[in-house]
Image (tube, rainbow, N blue to C red; front, side, top):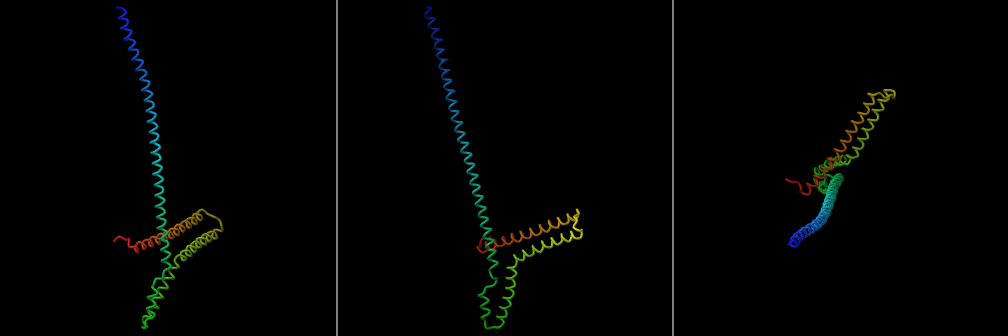
Length: 208
């Protein structure tokens, strides 16, 4: 009877201990498995982060390439506009064929009209071709005037700088520089814009 009770309790205790030991092993095995899965997930997240960074870098590179392409296209359009502006300066304003027809005519007034037209269009061509050199000469004259003005101020004051004289010279130079720079930029910008507009007009791209 006692042996039965001992066997019963010892078997139960052994079973409990075995269960505890088994569960402890299962716990550590599961913990190790979870740790391994966590490491895999972290590695996967790192790979995704790298892929995301690579995608962002690729997007940035594509954006830069697009920006360079846009800048190149704009530069090409500006160059075309400038070329057209140069062509317009070198193109005669009247058609030689039309003038030949007037001159070859038997009527004296047609020849007179041809001479008047040729005279006025010749003047316009001279003025048109003299615009850019004229601006250069004009800017040079203005700079010379500034230097002469500053020299006169120094001579009047016996070459001694005073505060109000220095301020006067500086402001004169600043005002003249701003005027000339704005004039030159305004001329070139409007010249290119007009040339580009004429190109689009000639291509029929202007919306009505």
